[in-house]
Image (cartoon, rainbow, N blue to C red):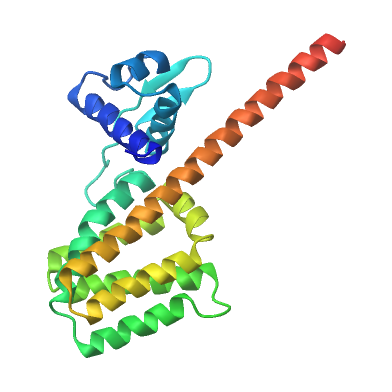
Length: 248
């Protein structure tokens, strides 16, 4: 297993222990050394797994104190959106929208394909801004959900896009990644469209799933970069205080 996949597997195992109650909300996780020995991996892998879990809102890393398990947020009222992370949302999308694409491949018409082709062109047209590309992207995914022919699937994808656009911490992560991946996103949507054009459910499912797998990896890299930048800033503040004290 590659190092990149390994830390994901370790993050999943730690999250499983959180769900089981071994590491309840509010508790402090064992140190990196203990976790590394328990799972038979390096401390670097443990650190990467913890960064991923923090980005998903499962733990809080407090410098000088430790790593603490956070409680899961529960919607406060009927109809309210759940407080989920961009990682939770993308994981759900990889499952739900991949199956929607597979179902759509069995029902898509020539008129549907023309509509999807126009949205793909709009998504990557010269001079298109982020908001315009996002709207074309949204319509592309919602159209596939409609073509799937199941109102429950269509409702789920509509709800997913509400969370994508209305939850601040989800929007922040997606905006950061999607601003930089226009070419990759267009290529991936083209592969989805091609699978639909062939009426191939398996290929449509795979193309949609791979689209979200790549997005998930990009979000992890962005989260890790932000975490490292924050550590550097804290380190620099400590250094400045030390130098100010010793030069006095």
